[in-house]
Length: 117
Image (cartoon, rainbow, N blue to C red; front, side, top):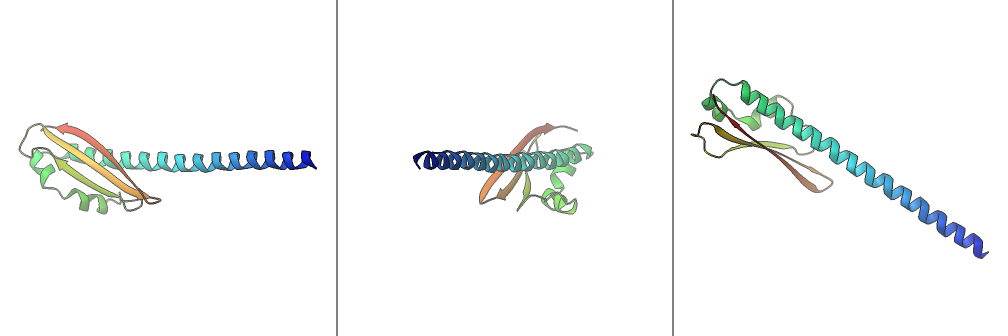
């Protein structure tokens, strides 16, 4: 009887460990996917900025609205905004912030670049 109890205990611990491993792997995979999508969205927005002809055109554009029209808000409650350190500087320092919420956790990716025209 003692061997049976020990065997059940070992089997229970083993199965619990395997289940926790797969649960953690799923969470890590979801985060990796989300961060790849967020980075892709930020880079897409920066490429559009790079295609603009003047710095004034970049500053005048409503980038959050532009991202909605392009369908870039695919992550849960995703927000994309831009911050200019000094809008009259050349080169223009631009920070693109991509934020989203998944499983009651808030994530934020920031991409920084400088552009000149």
